[in-house]
Length: 306
Ligand SMILES: Cc1cc2nc3c(=O)[nH]c(=O)nc-3n(C[C@H](O)[C@H](O)[C@H](O)COP(=O)(O)OP(=O)(O)OC[C@H]3O[C@@H](n4cnc5c(N)ncnc54)[C@H](O)[C@@H]3O)c2cc1C
Figure 1 (cartoon, protein in one colour):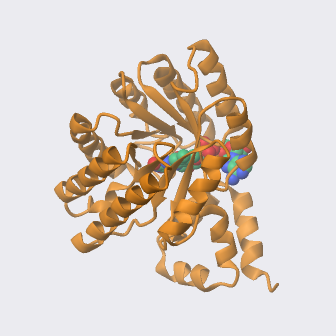
Figure 2: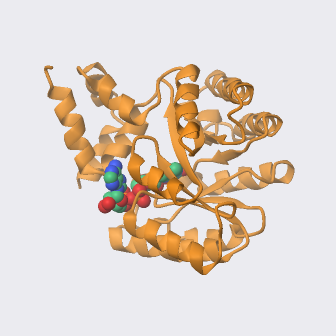
């Protein structure tokens, strides 16, 4: 219920104005977002890499409605990749890309062309790209773009969401050699016709999907903060004899940093997903929807007069 309210608020421009202009919003945003500028992203990446973590960088921006906006997003990724390579931060850092930010909503071919340019730049920089997954109406289109991109850039990463009923089958299709697949629970409000609704059903699906990926031939990327899923991931890594070069854990910037450090300290590959940019509102609201205690933290900061 609370999750639905927050996700509805994430689409309200009135609530966005209220939140954006509230005192101390900046401090809250800074916990989850590296900053507005490319330099901020680089600084955060340097810190994480120095701490033994890998990174994937996401330039925030979802409401792309014109080709010009899509091109600007593409150009930001090209600039970012050049700077990462120049700073010696590749291959430790890769990039995560939302096709909606590249024009998918109005021109799938344009989104593909933009994504292709980013994949080519990542390849030249010695790193990779992962295509984030958005709501279920985009899944087929995103997987289609992925399969086209993988013809020339086979290391392009996919994301599958365990809450979707179709995902076990998608995991089977994508568990082939060289296939990088991020498995997450899923962050959008989806109808029962396509998605499991209860936490228990989503968790059970996550484990089934993890079993398929970890026993398959691809490169699983287990994106979760859930202690139970992480423990099962560690167990499957032992069971299927997967060392740190054959799978990784992924978590979001600012969430469970001590657990990220613990796993890295134990020799696992751990990748932190680092968002940056001006358009932090939708991203922040999805994080709040996931965890009511984040809402308490946020609410306190919003009303704080300090
Ligand atoms: C690297 C990465 C990339 C992602 N990419 C996508 C994507 O492309 N598309 C998409 O739809 N979603 C994506 N997500 C979001 C994902 O789908 C989930 O919405 C999100 O990760 C929350 O699910 P969870 O597995 O972490 O655990 P949840 O089910 O939210 O929580 C389970 C348990 O984890 C622990 N936990 C969770 N959050 C916290 C916290 N803030 N602090 C302390 N403990 C916590 C608690 O013990 C909690 O009970 C991504 C997530 C990650 C980590």
